[in-house]
Image (cartoon, rainbow, N blue to C red; front, side):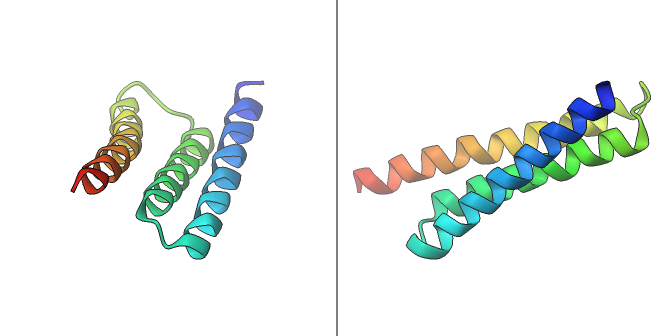
Length: 86
């Protein structure tokens, strides 16, 4: 059941990445590009997590990749607000 849920999360993240990349192609707004990259990174991370079956010594790497993906989302929001104020 755990692998099924990880696969579902990975698939959902991949679909969200494709949607954001489609929005980016239409608008050329970097916010959508950053969101798409973040969700794609999250989809790959979850798929590898399910494929390899995380062991306790490998779990730190998966969490660091997840932190990078969330940091990319935060950076996209901050950058969008900084550009808007100028």
